[in-house]
Length: 393
Image (cartoon, rainbow, N blue to C red; front, side):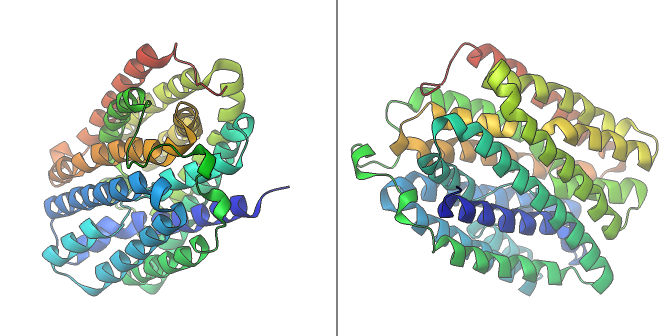
């Protein structure tokens, strides 16, 4: 029987990723219609991700002590506030302030405090033996939600000839999240018996978490060159693809990504978490490099879909590995710090990607940089952690 809190956390993941997917397909195009240049958009997205990093770090390193439910509700309110602000102003300065303080996802992926705290909460109510499998379904739910959001955002903006309606929908879903988070039970909190000394960061797990954070940051820095908003914009520039078609493309991509995550738990049970992470991630990065080399839209979409069909197998295994190597009262902080490392890495890349997309001769370079850096990450991760086993498996 599935615990009520598990159902609620899967619901919040689904609602949130639906909102992120809808926003990511139209965000860069929307911002350029407001009069922002590609370089300004890149700067804005970098500052937005940097702000998300700061918000996530503050909330997640305090969640185990001050309350996981409370921090999740705060994050949802910041998400709603950012959506309202983005719909209400054309000012680059005000957009930057709203994006920095609030929670905006330009990639279609997780930002803010939600994922780390939800992972810690799920690990609280799910046995260790089932954790990777639950995280795989959790990833699948998010990928399907992102796919449906991408499809909905693209078609809705195209049908209504309005990008702002998607932005307002994003804000409304933030309020929905706040309501659902408020209904979580006390079971998701750290048990009193498991609490260590009052702190806002890590204890004995510090060394391994910081090493993982450095590697995850490198991976995310590579991925930041091709966040979904920029990838959609590249298809728009290269092939003149309209928003409805972009939504369909990324719907398919995220469906394939979600299905790939389901295979992760089976592979991990046979080959181990680290091997599963690396040997599924490597070929997906080779395919990423090949996308801009395709001469036609169908071929480019085909390679993109092939890439997404194996791209998410490392996600539940990575999440499970982090949860396995730390104490229960360090899980939110560990997931938060590794998540912040990823957000920080991703935040540094868009400003460069925006500059490149503004120059036709450079528009494909972000794909090459992303794939190359991610391959380096895979090799370093394997070398450093293939022999390190989780403590609770």
